Image 1 (tube, rainbow, N blue to C red):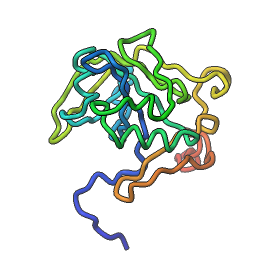
Image 2: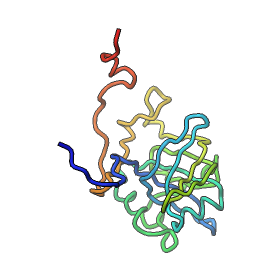
Image 3: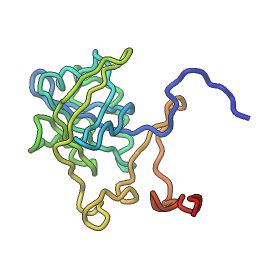
Length: 191
């Protein structure tokens, strides 16, 4: 029997993304966001929900760009810290020892140590309740070469992305391969 938990955003898991932007003074900043995902395949676009009062949000609006650095298991503590303090008050890169890297594709920094980077130009901002849905068109994706499958796809087992569980407020790693998409379920197709 299922128990009702009410109206809550408990879809699990959610990503642990360091959303990078230069602030109003041009300083590199990144914050952790879990409310995000792919919003379109053509043009390739990503969406992240941020509150208006976030330091990163102002920077995205000013510079019309942002990056998504996918946090991995090896950097769980640093990623968590990026969501604890505000870039208004502290240089989070200096505090964690993470490296801000200037994107060569958009006017935003990314986290050098994180294995997968998505660079976006701001295309839309939509107000949704207490959040602003920031949508960016993907200009480039960068992946550590040793984290690729067949030299051309991000390999989840090598990247080992961190995921977040809303409600319980916990971080987890990714489990094992279950099968190939669009193939595993073919046994249910009527012949």
